Image 1 (cartoon, rainbow, N blue to C red):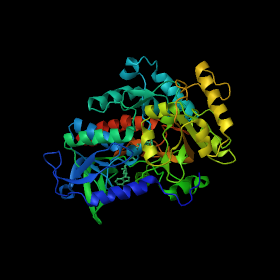
Image 2: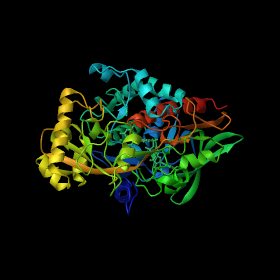
Image 3: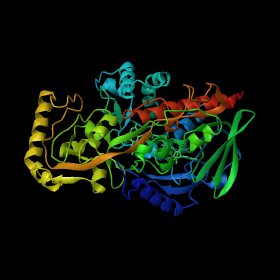
Image 4: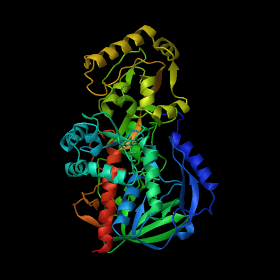
Length: 507
Ligand SMILES: Cc1cc2nc3c(=O)[nH]c(=O)nc-3n(C[C@H](O)[C@H](O)[C@H](O)COP(=O)(O)OP(=O)(O)OC[C@H]3O[C@@H](n4cnc5c(N)ncnc54)[C@H](O)[C@@H]3O)c2cc1C
C-alpha cells in the first residue's frame, strides 16, 4: 500500500540505536580477550540484549575472509569460516548488527528436523521442496532449492548446538505442514537469533566492526582480493583472500524499487534502513549476474502508519482476516502474494486481523504489537466491532461461523486447510488494521550451490561468495514465510565453508 508520510519503524528505531551507539562506552572491554569493543545497545522487537562491537582502532589491513554485512547470513558465514580454521572479519555499515534478520519475527522453515520428529509432525524434504516450488510458481532455482531443503534440518541442529534452540513449531502461509521453527516461548525469531549469533561471534573472538560501510569489492587479474570501506569518513582498503557478500536485499531503496517495479513506487516498507542493495550494485559492477530483480514481495499484513510487519505467526496461530463489513474474504493462509492481492482488491484496500486472548498468549509478538499501540481490544466481539466501526452482528456471525469451521475442520467458505487448531472464543478479542507493504526482494545476485557468484555466461568470479537476501533465484516469484531465515542460515554456513576452502588455497 502506498505510504503517506510513513517511514519504516526501523528508521526511528535505528535512530534510537544510533544515539545509543554514539553514547556507548567506547572503552568497554568485549567478551573477546583479544579485541576491544565499543558498546552499542540493540533494542528491537523484544528481548535483545546489549551488544558490543570491536573497537575501530583494531581494524587490520588483511584478513583471510572479509564478510560484508552483519545480518544472519554474514554471521553464519563468519562462524563457519572460523570453524574451518580461517580468520574472518565482519564489516557492518550501520551502528548495530542484525539487518533485516533482527526484524524477522515468524521463524525458520525446516523439514525432517529432530524437533518435528519429537513432536510427531510428519514432514519431508520433498514436501518442503514442493510447497516452496508451488509458492514460487515453479520458477525457483531448483538446485539451490534442493540444497536448501536438504540442509535445513542440519541448520536447525547447528543453531541448537550453539544454544539457539528453535523447537516451537507452527504453520506459515503456503506450507502444508507445521514447519516454521521458533524460539521455545514462541517469541520473535530475529532478536533471539541475532543475540545468539553475536554471542557465538564473541566467544569465537571474531572481529565485528560496525559503522564500516563497504563501498567497493576489489579485484586483481580476475580474482577478488578484498574491499574498500568508509570508516569515519575515510576510505580504507581491507585485503582478503576471499570476500563474502551478505548485505541483504534492497527493500529500503526506493530508487531500486521504482526501477524494477514502478507499480510499487511509494509503498511503505518493512525493511531495515540498511537494505539498500549495495552488494547487488557492487557485484554487478564486477560483472556478476542478477536474477529475478522484479520479484519483490509485498506482505499482506503491514501497519501502514509505521511500516511495522504483523508476523504471519498471528495467522499461523489461527487469526482470521475480515473486511470493513466484518466478513472474511479469503483464505488467510494462502501465499503472501495472493492474500495481498485479495486485500488490495477490497474497496477499502485494507483489512483487520481478528484474534482472541488465547492466540495472543501463543503468539508472543502480540505483546510487542500492543506496546506499539496498534492492537484494538474489546472485552466482547460486539465491543471490538464498535471500536473498529464494523457491524457487530456481522462480525459475531463471522467469528461464530469460523469457530464451527475449526470444530468440523472444514472451511467451506474459503477452503482454508491449515492453522485450524484453535477457535476464537476467549475474550478479550483483538483487531489490528493492516494492508500490504514491501517486504522482501527475491531477486539478487546469481550464485551456485557453493555460493560462488556467477557471471552471465555461468563462469564464477574467483574468490567472491554471496548468501542471503542479496542473492536471487531460490524463492522464485514468491517467497514462503520462514524460508528467508532458512536461506540465510543454510547458505550463510555454506558461504563460510566454501570461502574458507578458497582462502586456504586460492587459485
Ligand atoms: C519485518 C521483517 C520480518 C521478517 N520475518 C521473517 C521471518 O519470520 N522468517 C523469514 O524466513 N524471513 C523473515 N523476513 C525476511 C528475513 O528476515 C530476511 O530476508 C533475512 O533476515 C535477510 O538476512 P541477510 O543476512 O541476508 O540480510 P540482513 O539481515 O538484512 O543483513 C544485511 C546486513 O548488511 C548490512 N549492509 C548493507 N550494505 C552494506 C555495506 N555496503 N557495507 C557493510 N554492511 C552493509 C546491512 O546494514 C545489514 O546489517 C523478515 C523480514 C522483515 C523485514
